[in-house]
Length: 121
Figure 1 (cartoon, rainbow, N blue to C red):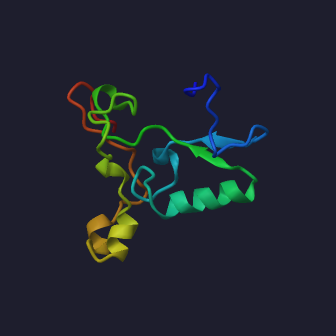
Figure 2: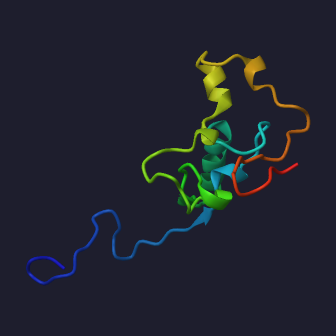
C-alpha cells in the first residue's frame, strides 16, 4: 500500500496484461556435454518460445546445488553454477580448445558429485 492507502501498481504490467510461458530448467536443454547450459541452446530455446507466441521462460534457480543436487538447496543465493557455463562459448572466446571439451559419443549421463549420493553410471 502507498502512503495514501492506495494499492501499489507495477508500471511493467497494465491491469489487463496477460501472457504465457513455460517452465524449463537450463539443464534440460540438449547439449553434447551431458546437460544443458546457458549457451547457444538456451538462445535457440528463447527463439522457439517467441515463435510459438510465448512471452516468458521460467527457470529454476541457477545457483550451485547442495544436498541432493536440488536447485532449491543452493549453497549460495548469489553464486552461479559453474556447470551451466557454455563450453561452446568458452571455445568461441578462445578460453578453451575444442579438444578440451570433446564429449564422448554418446554423451554420458550427468554425474553430479555429492558426498551423500552415488555417482550415476
